[in-house]
Amino acid sequence: MTDLIHVTGLALHAFHGVMAHEAKVGQTFYIDLTLDIDLSRASRSDKLADTVGYDRVVDVASRAFRATRYRLVEAAAGAVADGILTAFPVVTSVRVMVHKPHAPIAATFADVGVTIVRKRQGNG
Image (cartoon, rainbow, N blue to C red; front, side, top):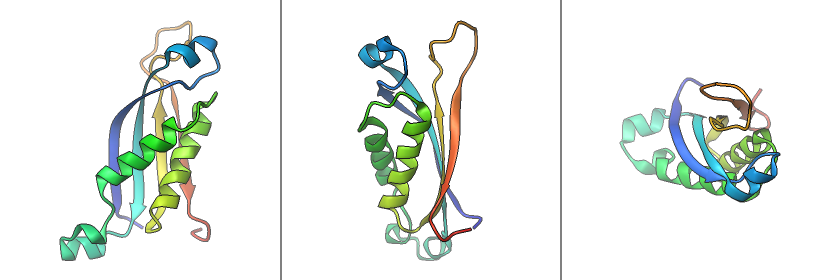
């Protein structure tokens, strides 16, 4: 598939992390999503019904990310990917990048995070 939908820089406050203060205070995470989807029909019809609405993608991702307090951003990213694939059967795969720019690391850095890619079962 060569068609993609992107949502970048989705800022969400959540309480993920292994440190006790992360559970109390939380922090802002940034999520980038890339959905693999066939947009040929939508590109011809110009109808929302033939694609996936960005607002729904943001809603599903936000709910999945905040539904549970995860110790690892890997688990939070996995929940987002699972939520997207469950909510949108037309999406064949999803890439979820979670940025944690305020991770409690004794170093100067711009960003840390994870990227996961999940494919719908039966899609290579």
